[in-house]
Length: 420
Image 1 (cartoon, rainbow, N blue to C red):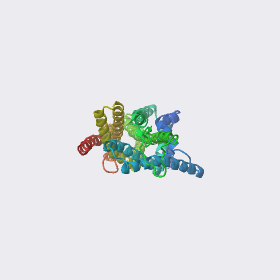
Image 2: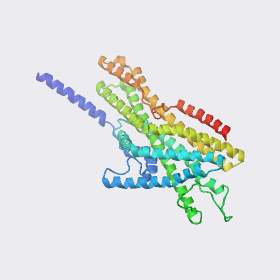
Image 3: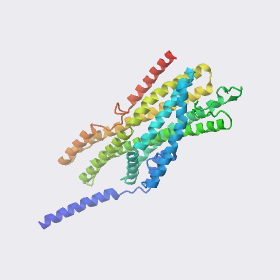
Image 4: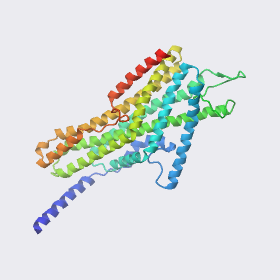
């Protein structure tokens, strides 16, 4: 009995040593810089707005200061958007101009929805960022780190592409177009530059200098804040999705190498694979539950925005307005790129989760002990229901959905041209 107990103790000790060796054989000393590389753009844009998930701490004072910051930012947004809506529905007379303005209103409305989504789901999104940093810290080997860096670079590239197009189109829309637009003639026959957002302030009319110029600059600042909200949240979403993809890809790599493991410690390796597979699934499910409304608003809203931007391109082409034409083309391209990247990322996430089952099937499981074969079957069964992101639980976020968006926007454009 003592001999048997001694053997069992030795076996358990060997397993613990193997697990310890597996965990500690590689240490990512650069995990902080790696994690920072993935989230730095989103953090830079969202922290001044008070909605970055890791902004602040759990102390009462920090929560109070962040609440004040959010109230101020949201109040400034309403200061711009509410009078703009009032002007649109009660004072706008030029139908063609109105068609162009609606695209900006929808874009800004989407920013408000995203703004409050980040606040409502701050806890879940904060946990995702903490897990992201832990994954960089606990990476097992250099090969896994290379996979994570590759996906982080893809997310970073998506972000920079969208930011370049968004700021490249939105800033001329808010600054250059008003400066080059037809001047407003007042009752005393003096003229003034139209505001970036035509507005109707009920309680005051800032028509005289310097109030009008201050309001003009205020519009530009607030519109830039709204643009930063859209771009920052988009950057964070791209980071989240690509990190989820890399979690599945890392598990696939370990499954491919599983039967080639010469340590004969298959059970420990398979335990790690199953645990990390579940962790990747839970990470994707958290993104789905927290952001599916954002995805729905993004796809539906961008469909309408693209439609009105296409209309703006046609109108400025017919009127020979080169600056307006270029601005609307850039804005339309940025929205197309935005929708395509999100759809592509959703498609990639689904494909990577499916590849888990494929890797399990094509592994040399027939050379493994019989008990482990059943475990492989369970992995394949679990992978038959892939992780995916949905647009408000209506449809999956995929390239097929992007193709439908393009066709729908063209159909809406034909309808507007027929009516207007």
